[in-house]
Structure formats: structure tokens, C-alpha cells
Image (tube, rainbow, N blue to C red; front, side, top):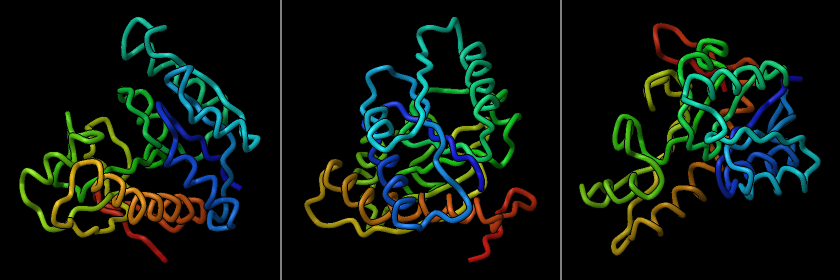
Length: 208
């Protein structure tokens, strides 16, 4: 049984999707054992506590720089014996110290179809604002491995979502969460925990 550590910064809707999926038996071969927040007031911590999941808080401003914070996060994850680290609305930058310690063992969900609308500055509503400004007819979500380069790791799963007439960034964000993020993130976690994802030359091979 693999130990899953989830990193959070805010409300924790993606964390809740993972918790609910685990309760339904949809995450095979793994268990959420720890939630680590970058903010002490992150509501995601309450979600974890309400479900009996161990929590830790590493507040970014308590550390001098990214390198010091990343070192502390790496050490915490090693202490927790993390087999898989999931970014679930984790908005704090970590450097390569963490990625190097957990190669192809860290995953993130991004609210667009990478390589569109991704990279530095594309987070939260900014992603959906950019998609609507471009007039795309479909958007969606991508689960990918985390590397030192933002949103550039190997893609694991993607799911498209239709953009509707009259959409606002908020309505599109909600539809993508409900129809894509909350579905493919637990699915990718389960696939990882069952050893069904391999990476060759920067490209994943997924056995479903």
C-alpha cells in the first residue's frame, strides 16, 4: 500500500475529490496518509482532519528563500515516507531539491489541456481568462508529473471539456473541476499506486 502525501494551499476541493474517491474504493493500492499545507489557515486542513488524515503545516514566510523552504518540504516528505506526492491546489514554488528526491513520483493537475495555457503565470482563474480570450471551443484538465520546469513534466491523463456560449472564467473553472479535474486526478493517483504508469523519454505509457 503506497503512502500518498497531498500538498495544499487553499480550500482543498481537489483534496476532497481524492478523499471521496478513496472512500468509494476508486484509489487502489494507495492511501492518503498526510496532508501538508503552505498556509496555516488553509481549509484543506479541516477536510483532512475531518477524515482522520494526519496534517502538517510548512508556512512559506517562515523560511528565508525557496531553497530553504524546498529543503524543509523534502525532509518532511521523506519523514512521511511518501511514495506519491500530489499537488492539490498547492500554489507555493518548490525547487529541484524536491523533484530530484522524488523523480516521477510527484503529480499535479492543471486546469487546461497542456501545452495550452500553462507555465508561469497560468494558475487559478488566469488560465480560464486566457482560454476564453483566445476563443477556444474546448478546454479541460491535465494530470502530469511535476518537474523543476513549471507544467512541463510528462503528461499522464487529459480530459476535454466543452466551452459554452456565455461562459465566464468562474463558470468554466467550475465545469472543468467537476467534469475533468475531480475525475482524472483520482484516476491518475490510482494508476500510479497500481504501478500502471511508466515514463520513457519524457512520455508516459499508461496501462488501464
